[in-house]
Image 1 (tube, chains in turn green, yellow, brown, purple):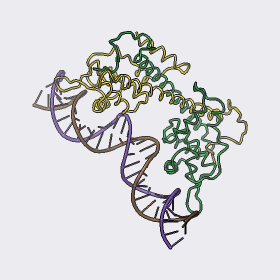
Image 2 (tube, chains in turn blue, cyan, yellow, green):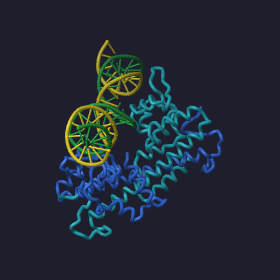
Image 3 (cartoon, chains in turn orange, blue, brown, green):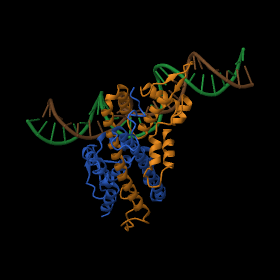
Image 4 (tube, protein in one colour):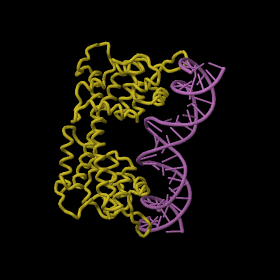
Length: 169
Length: 169
DNA sequence: CCTTGCGTTCGAGCGCGCTCGAATCCCTAA
DNA sequence: TTAGGGATTCGAGCGCGCTCGAACGCAAGG
């Protein structure tokens, strides 16, 4: 997805260790300084997705977009704010239907706030679980790398054992 | 045994966040103490995938599986070890084609070890990048949660602002 | 013998999230 | 005036990773 680039740029502003600074968080979360009405190409560039994807999101009911006299889409600040939120949620792995659900709640009015908060809390837990899973995968992969090189392998001194998982011959 | 080291490092990487999912624990299943020849249902249970998936992996060239007199699949220790590796790589997000590539290299012989190691190193970097991405998404999500509840929100004291990303009305 | 239940092969189908193509329309610059 | 580039709608197609269904085979129990 094109949004990988977005994340890469965000990560570039990040330290080595992966602990996000307050600035970066705020930049990711800040929805105030959004540009004025943009045509689709510029909105797509701003959001780092394709125009196709923007139309798709609109068809999916995630955002309403106004038109100019010629029928061309014009993304105003509200639409852009919403799409910032949508792309961020998508980027963090929230499925389309959950984003749709959230948006439907938001459109339904203020009284759905508690339910929306629940969705966010669930999503947060999902992200945390995924991070833990990836940490396990990382540990397993690093272990395997260590046993390969042998240089920093923990206790791999048996020359016969080259790859216990995937035998060569 | 080597696996103790794997587990301790995996657990160390886990930190505060609590119990890992059963899936992931299974992904770390010991590759040394693999059971004897198993029919497909038991192999599937052992690996925590469906028999369908095991047949699919075989069709995809990821593993060769022997048969009994009746033509039924029998997963021996070598096949199971390989499938433990395969499922672990899949679980950690490695695409099928990369797993296929790795397996093809392993089948090609010992001289492909450096290239396999490269693949693992790339994969490790991919996992690390994904963890960083998820940490960013987590931070953004927690920020949004905080601004929702208002309890621990950093500088959100304006009562008019309920959701800057997704307006209610 | 017949049912039950698990196995086999093969190809088709699905859910997801885009991504693309065709036909048409609008605006601008030469 | 005409060519171009980019916009529109609509539905279809794609890449991934399974997942399933049809039609059939084998083995054991009642």
